[in-house]
Length: 255
Image 1 (cartoon, rainbow, N blue to C red):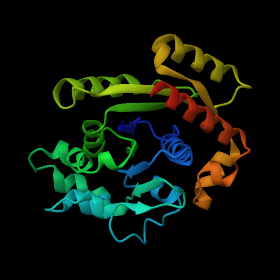
Image 2 (cartoon, helix red, strand yellow; image 1 turned 135 degrees about the vertical axis):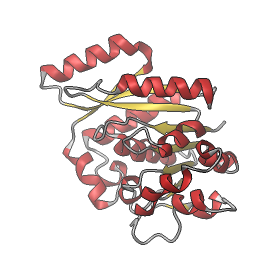
Image 3 (cartoon, one colour; image 1 turned 90 degrees about the vertical axis):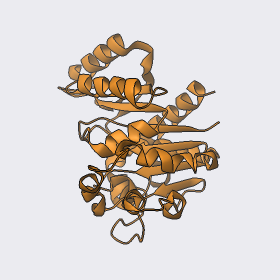
Image 4 (tube, rainbow, N blue to C red; image 1 turned 60 degrees about the vertical axis):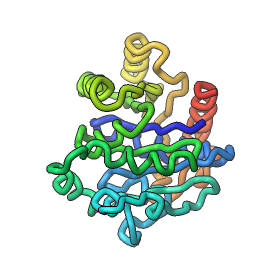
């Protein structure tokens, strides 16, 4: 079995990149061959997994604008066994302008991933914090979506728009698209606001919400600056334990 999953929320700062890096890392450490696809021009996943985006020779951008479109040539190893990366760099910010007038522009990533998806058990796509053409490519290419939701005021702001976009894509471009799960992130259990957001999200989305909640954790915030996933940076931290729990829950759902 293999599965392509986008991590998506057009609201920035909700823990998309932290989630994609750490969930993918723990899956790889459990011997599931996993691929990370960084389709965000900010390149946070690329840098956060320990690859300098300014030094890479080929990125997802080269694939998107290439005439022969061989995605295999862009895949690189990471410091984690069984974890591979299709990196991004700042060049990707110009890809939308170059793609906008091309036919079938929503399907470029899908066609590339179809040729390599059987090489991996799980493929995770880190989307930009916008409902852009790059995000549309990701949602057209994937089987399901994980939506991180920050436990803060305005947590649900813009979520209706994202869900509407997912529905439209399911109706018109990707009929297999489903919601893999909603993930509550950056929880501060000392505050009533966090408890209220958790209650509201669970009442509204019910079983779609993961039981695991990712807490606010200094070590989680520090890890990207060292280019390491939390499992390598601080495996005994609360953040590491939470992402390990999420991984176990994810695997249980995907049995």
